[in-house]
Length: 277
Ligand SMILES: O=C(O)CCC(=O)C(=O)O
Image (tube, rainbow, N blue to C red; front, side):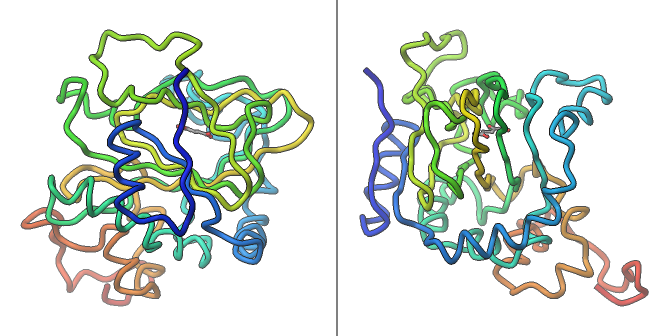
């Protein structure tokens, strides 16, 4: 029976990376304490409270005529977390994420970047999400693709198999394209609040169905090779006015940095307030 390995925050970065490389996913318990979770909840509440759980990103995608079914209803989803939450910025630079990305992404780039951010609340009655790979948009590369993305889900509330805990297909980052996961190969990430689930960009995964009467609250954070187009447009979600206020480390991780010659900009161009970037 496949399973997701569990390690603790005190375990070595090498152990986390070894699990990721072997199983395509790992749960690290005890990463963020109650105080950190409370700060994040406070900072994001004004943004999440106004989300219509029947519309959320689902409606936006449906209106685009794109993947209408990709985001299930009865969920609340917001992005732009770097701009919206000071606490979230500590996740972006967290040593756990830096060491995993150093080991998995650095061999394929000079530096990596934040790929996407989201707060994801899965409500009672939400159906499960279709299994997918973070690297699916890079169709040019054939599955199994080169390592391009590392993803994570930070449990703000407990995650269970019943309340929408993220579904993972262990080992699927190594599968050929045509292999389809059998139901007994899909495992829900059950983890207490404060844990972080990491997975490889090639690992099949998706949000679980919520069969309880509680909301499952997780924060998504992924990173990609510094020469790829980011999934979330960080220059819109973290505009220059905000980027200027961030630490150099966060600003550069968000993408305000060149990767070799890629991403240059004219420093004399002014932002919307008329100030130099
Ligand atoms: O909410 C989750 O557990 C996973 C979400 C996800 O994979 C997605 O929205 O693409």
